[in-house]
Structure formats: structure tokens, C-alpha cells
Image (tube, rainbow, N blue to C red):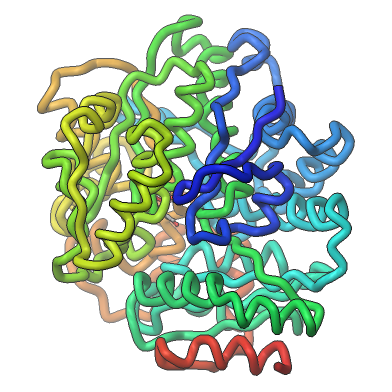
Length: 495
Ligand SMILES: *Cc1c(COP(=O)(O)O)cnc(C)c1O
């Protein structure tokens, strides 16, 4: 059955998957959502015999219904290749009673690669299918990991340009170095004086500027988004939840049909929403455990039913989760409002206005699948240390937030359901924080010195993504104010 995509803010005019991918965001500022969640048409037992790429096809074909088999398989082949350092693409590692789903084996060693290695191909294919002649300009706000993963995905891709805005003082030194050393003339990286929410809001504003869109079209350009608001990011992320269940099954860690829980370190709510979609496709997932850092706006939301971003923005050791406006939550809100775009639009207008909204009791009822909690900085560091002491396994700060919350969940509920923890970044991406947690003290050493020490301690070779930036020259040296973002874009496009 065909899946069409509706805006979360205005009913009517559903679009095909390829159109939703091209547009990124709906013209009314809403996010595209599938009109129904398709059920898996292969059994879990069948899926358990498949490779990552085969599972990817089985899942994505159900959502991207206007792609031909050849088109979709071609995208999948190009995405999940030797850019990943393991053929299984997303290994499961058992440690201290949980299964860590390692989503960081791609080109930039964070889970964003899982979707951003395929998005450029989905986008180019979508452009071809829709006879788009314009050059596609990818506009992206990043809290650190999306930026590099998107740059790596789009660099040198014909018919595209990519502009990345990141908070100048809000990303790790390694994250920044990864981005500002990006080669290829179709890329631009700019630090802004502001935080991630400022960057994301700025980008959304540029997107919804109709005058600019018209001018761009005259000059042969059009915008699209590589942020997790793009359905072309969300759909590939559903794959690894299906895959992890299938993998547990094939390794006989679970019985067919047995429920599992999933823990996701959450920022923009994209990754955990993908898990929710996987559940709704028929994967036996019981609880979706939403883990936050000190920016615990989601924990508060799940506990009270009020989403309130009026609070101090905290810079933490898990910067990719330093977010107060979780964009993808809107897709869940729309759904629990009964797919009511008007109701959702009202709530989002309130969020835009006084920075908060409250959902009804009836909506709250529908959040039973979710459990929210958070980890402080000290708890996160302690978890990294304790897990290493326990079994020699080193996890990054984001994953440690999830592991901490998982412990809290088990303590709270005594639930012994087998659990998959989304491991979203390589510890090498956040070497300083990870090493300081392992050593239980601050270190005066340089970042790359710490990289080498971590490699020894963890007994893991330094990933290629880190090796290649050790000596790479800085190519992008741009900083701007939030209100200058649009003129930066214009300059780059020669407008
Ligand atoms: C982006 C990111 C997250 C948060 O994922 P969302 O989909 O935004 O919730 C968590 N950990 C890492 C390492 C990330 O890069």
C-alpha cells in the first residue's frame, strides 16, 4: 500500500516520499509524517537471516513507496559499503547485562552516519524522479555530529551544495576539527555565536522564507535539509532497530516474539522516534526509554505532560544532546493528538511564543510506551568508569547517559526485559571527556595524545576518522552572528 506524507501543521495535500525528502520541511513549517505506519511484510524469523542491507531494503521499501526496487537497492548499495569499518554495519556488543547497538562504524564515527550515508543518494534519486533541474542546497544546523556526517555524505556529490552552521563554542574540539577540515568546494562550514537551538531556529527561518525560495529558484537553486526533520533521515534509522531485534533472534539471545526494551540517548528525538516507528511496524519493543543529559526537557515532559524550554541551556559532555527544542517530538505530538494538524499547530505556536505547551490527559495516556529519565555529568562519567572497570568496554558520553538512565530504569521498575542500548558515538569522538572519566581526573594533555592513550586503554585501534584529522589543514574559518546566517548563505551561492 502506498504511503503518503502529511504535514504536521496543515491537513490536506499529502505528498509522495520523494517529494517529502526533497522538501525536507513542509511549506507551512510542519514536518512530514507518514499517513500510516506500514507493518513489516516479512516475519522476524525471515529477517533474522538477512544482512543489514537486505533488512534495510525490507524496511525502507515499505515507507518509500514511490521508489522502484532498483532505485532503492542502488541507494542502499552505495550507502552501506566500505565507508563502514565492519560488514555487519551495526554490531551488537553484550556488556554488563545489556546489548549495545554500535551505530558508530561509519565515516564520521557517530550514529548520524547510519542515515546520512544514504540521504544524499535518496535525495539525488528523488530529484531525478521529480525532474528537478535546480542545484540542491543542503542547509544544516548541527550540534556537532550531523554536520560532519552530512558533509561527508554530500562532499563532491554533483548537483548539490551543503552549508553547515554549528554553535562556535558548543561542540567538542574533535567535532569542530572534523568539520572545518572538510574538503570539496561544494561545502561551507560556519560557526555561529549562539547555541544549537539558535542555529536550528535560524535554519528553519531561512527555509520558510518564501521570497528567498523564489529568488533561489530563479538562480537555479533550491533548499533541502539533512537534519533529522527530513523523513529521508528518519526512515533509514528505523532499519537498525529491526536489524538489532533480528540479530538477537539469530544469535538466540531472545525467542521469536519476545519483547525487548530500547534505550536511546536523546536530543532532537529523531533516533528514539525511529525506534517507536519500528515498534509500530511490528517489532516487539516494550518500553522506549528516553535518556537525557542535564538538558532534561524531555524527562520533564514525560513526567508532567508540559514541554517547557524556558530554562538555562547547559553545555555538557554529551554536546549532541544539548538541545532544548526537540524537533522530532512534534511528530509524536501530532500522532497522540489523533493526527490532528490544527491541534498540533496550536501547541507548536505556543512553543514558538511563550516557549511551552501542555498536552491533554488523553494525549498523555498514549505515552505509556515511553519512560524518561536523565543523567547528570557526574553520573555519566561514573558510568563510563564503572563499565570499563567491570568489563573493559569503553563507551562514549552520550551512550553513557543512556546506560545511566537504563540503570535508573531497572532500579525504578525491576523490569528484567532484555535491553538494547543505542550506542551513538565512538568514544574517540569525545576522547577528552571519556579519558577524564576513565582517569577520574582532568588531564592537561592534548586531544590527540589522549586519543593514543584511549587506544591503548580500550585496546581499540584509532578510527580512521580521527587519524585523518590529526594533521589535516583547516579549510573553513568562518564565524557569524545568528542574524547574519541568511547573508552567509547568499554569499556562498553568489546571490
Ligand atoms: C545526534 C546524537 C544524539 C541524539 O540523537 P537525536 O536523534 O537527536 O535524539 C545522541 N548521541 C549522539 C552521539 C548524537 O550524535
